Length: 138
Image 1 (spheres, helix red, strand yellow):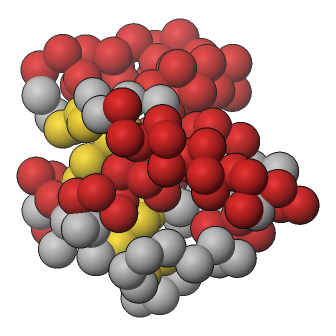
Image 2 (cartoon, one colour):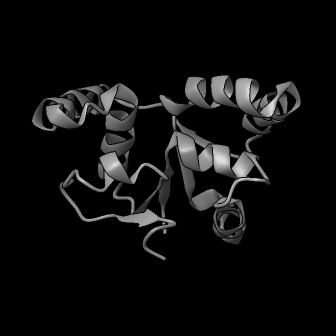
Image 3 (cartoon, helix red, strand yellow):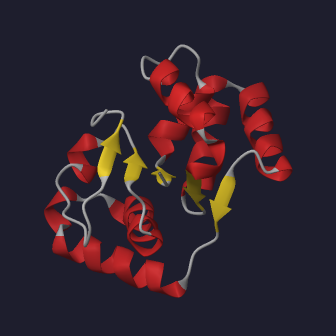
């Protein structure tokens, strides 16, 4: 099952003290190659890891990216178009470009799930195909 990851889910993977860490880590360890990180989350994860979890965690995440522990989807122009469309359609939610790109990548790749802790945004948007929100839908 392909899983496109949002920022919060990746931060939870990096933070052993996070309440969702164990379940998300278990999902990741079942099949790391099923997890796709959209390019747009990388600066957010880096910044939040560095400021909330510390330099060592941020550097370990960067090293994992370099060594291929995570698969990064570097995107297509159509992802930006779709993200913009979703942002316009769901303007009242105010979720922004990064969440829109995560949703667009999930649609384009035919993902069965999005790993996210942001149920306010991801739970309200109807994508072209139904996706599970993990860990909520386990």
